Image (tube, rainbow, N blue to C red; front, side, top):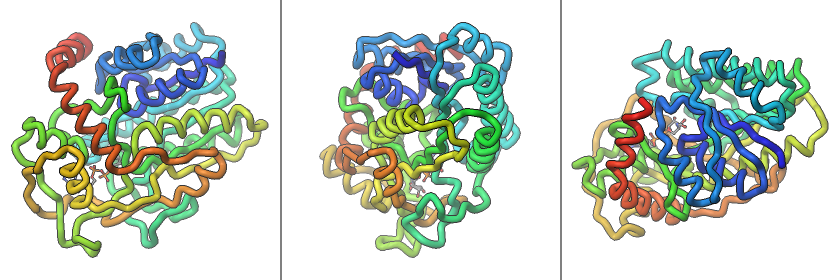
Length: 351
Ligand code: WQD
């Protein structure tokens, strides 16, 4: 059984990927310092798969502690690196915290990959590297633009670091550019747990609908789009997760070549904010309390993916549609309302 190290395995996309890896016969360990996540999702992974994976509560900025995990696990066949801070607005306010956390962590994990000759490495990147594209849908060869935030800059720099590493190390590497991951596992045992007031659209919708926040704002309805609101490519987190398992298989079956591969992970469909809200209202049966507000600084007007390359090279397909995304997101919001106290208690212990 091949052992895979997932960094950020207690987080939203990490946990869903751990489930997919386990269901596809891999052994999985996680490194997660739980600074932005608790162990609630580890419990959820166990409920879905019957497997309680080991999480090393280690800060990847601490090289010695990170290295010790590799010394204890000599048989790691691949690394999937999710662990990073990802709040666009926070990154503007705290740039050094973002550069230190996201880049020091990446360099340390790559230093371990070098020392322990790990043959396969998958990097969690983002469509944010495209900035405001001139032409949509974007392909992997669409020009990347100066990032609109330090968060986006850490993803661009991270891609360069991985590419340069792959030129001098016998390690197969892949960059996966996510569009907008949303929704929850159909079992509703795992999902997104935003810290504080959600900045992202779908958790803002579900928290407004359940009453955690009184009202949500549509950031801008005067854009040059079909209904004036921004266009994004929403993709179910389970489709993203399965793409990671396929990316790993792609690397494992590949001869050792230096070229670093890049793939867009998007549904290929552009959806406006108002269309997303309408889809939520349809599947939840709830009328959303929202107001039309001003544009949010740094927002991209419209972006969605050309995902042909990932579909052909990884033999990947998008299984969940917008209604599935909204339905599972809503069911998850209802579920965590029941477990609110448990989640608070677990986070309090860890942080
Ligand atoms: C989507 C649209 C908002 C909240 C960012 C990162 C990306 C990834 C996902 C980490 C925009 C609008 C939102 C609200 C709104 N991050 N919106 N009211 O900005 O496309 O992407 O998060 O992996 O890398 O760049 O996602 O969900 O924040 O916003 O109108 O209360 O929804 O203005 O048009 P975004 P988002």
